[in-house]
Length: 321
Image 1 (cartoon, rainbow, N blue to C red):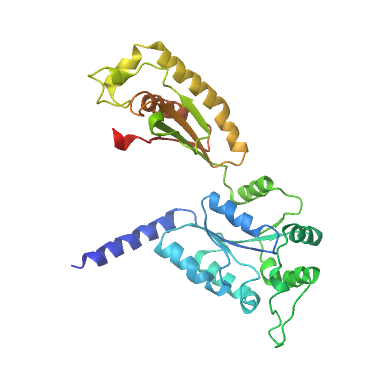
Image 2 (cartoon, rainbow, N blue to C red; image 1 turned 90 degrees about the vertical axis):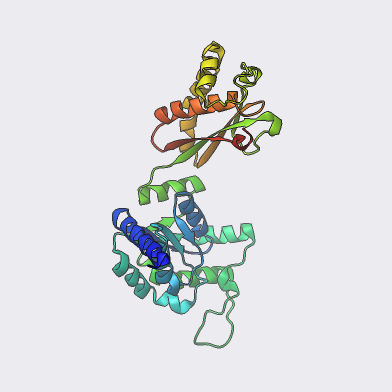
C-alpha cells in the first residue's frame, strides 16, 4: 500500500468536507488606481481573507482552484487592476462566469472601488505617484506608444475597467471615506463583526520587557513563592502555588483591579479598528506571580468579554521553567 497516496487522499477528503460544510467566499477586488483598492485588500486580509494583488485576470480560475481545492482556503480576495493584460479585461465576463459555474453565484462576488475624478487627481498629486496609464501603451491596435496626462489616464482607466465594474456586487466610493469607515463598509457587506484577539502575556522583567505590549502591569510587589524552597520548582500554574497565594489577600486584590480595568476598557478596542491587543503581566523571573495572574485573568476575561473578543494566555519564559 502506498502510504503517500493514502495521506494525499485523506487530505483531499478533508478539504472537500471543509468546502462542503463551511461558507466559501471568493471576492474579486478591482477598481481605479488611487481609489483604495490596495487598502481594501489589506482590510480583507485583516478580516481573515487570503489576499493576492495584481493577479492576471486569466489566472483567477487556476488561483481559486489551488487555494480552495488543494489548500482548503475558503476566504479569498483576488485583486485585479489596470496592470493586468488588457485583453484579459475585455474577457472578464468569461472569467467571472467560469468562477460562478464552479463555485456558485453565492460564493463569487465582485467588489469595485472608485472615487471621484477630482479626488483621484488630488491623491496622485499629493503622493506624487505616477498613474499606470501615464507610461503604458494601451492601444493594442496601434504600434506607437501612447502616454496620457493624469486626467486622461484616469478617464481611460475607467473605460478599460468597465467590463469589471458592470459585474460589481458592491461599489465603494472612497472619495469621502477614511480608512475606518472603509473597513466598516466592508465588514457590513461581508457580514463579519469586528474581531480582536487579546494576548495576555506573562514575562520576567530580568529578561527584558516586551516591546510590543500595549499595557504592562508590574506584579513584583506581590509575595514571591520563589523564596519558599518547596515551591521554587513549581510554576504559577500549579495548585500548590495557588494555595500559597490564597494566604495573601493582596494577590486577589491586584488581580481584581487589573480585571476591572481590562473588563472596562478592552471592549472599546472593538470600535477602534484594532485586531490585536497585548497585555503583559511581569514579575521578576516570569515563573510564579505573573504566570498565576495571567492564567487567572484569562479565565475571567474569557467569560466576560463581549462577542468578537478572543482572550489568549501565553507565557514568554516557559522554556526557562
